Image (cartoon, rainbow, N blue to C red; front, top):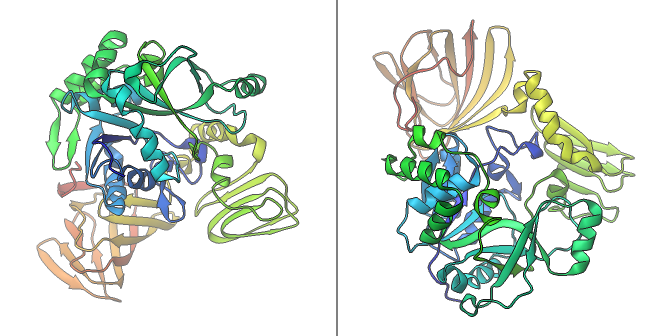
Length: 471
């Protein structure tokens, strides 16, 4: 099938606290491998390849390399608009619309939804093109399969469809998340759809709608685009005007007030993967309804979900339980209480628990490090550096480091010296000495780093040269 040209805009914001401990602020759910070995963002990019050979993403500055890694894995050339701070979907969409030619047809979609049938999704998007070209903002309603209280709803209008809209129907109104009784009634009425938060519109149509309903958001976003700074495939939105932008969703800012809103129904499988119950449903069940990912084992259990990628986790005699194990935190929850995970994360934050936001394994633009052990005045990390990558030229005021190469070869700058280390060789970096680690090889470099000193925080880094735009 031949598809009309569309520019997909992937909205990569979101903190992912509802899927703690796997998803955290430093690594939200869109970047976590949840479906096989692929992240939801990678799957989203693979899905839009049918609609366009390239895409645009709106992402946080601190996540730009995670976004790029997903794009590389999906084989999709990507340009990123980088937000200096999150300001919700209205500001993100406004910035994207202001950064492209007015007649560009934009498809806005979240980075963290799961839609397994890519061709059905692409065909549904194509069905909305006529309405979008005719000046409507097109949304896509998911045909509900049960009376969900977790989603907002879209009510289809009974009046005749604008002839210029093709297969799209008119929207009467948007509804908030209902209670159970109301959700059941909406399902029985038959003309209500789940709101997926996916939109198709011309850039100038969205700009005009923002000018009418949220002119302050449009002004701040357009100024942030006007004063943006380009850095390769990254475009950094100007901090001061974007920070002034009011934080509001596009639903509240525009969609609930706009007249020319069309909808195309989608009847394929869809999930916003918004809770651990939704994640559990992505795994096939056994005869007792148990779902196991990784090294989980169940005995005399029913409707139990185990996520255990690192070590054996055994459930015995449990029912309607979710067990999520990570390297540094464990969640055990009754299935009816998973919506309270976000509240638990807030409680951990108030208690100063670092695992509320940070993983033990931390991605970096050059690779990844895993903080495998820590005690008074010492920390041990496993460091992996990508082929051809290098860390910044840096020094530390409060710690010394000892590196042992486990796999591959390392080029090390230490003061005025440049040395090459091979497997089983080591080097000492004294406190206060400029140093840099590089991987000159074609395979990943793995080493063990032992830090010692009075202070071992990640902010004890003074960078002199860096190839990743960090200060």
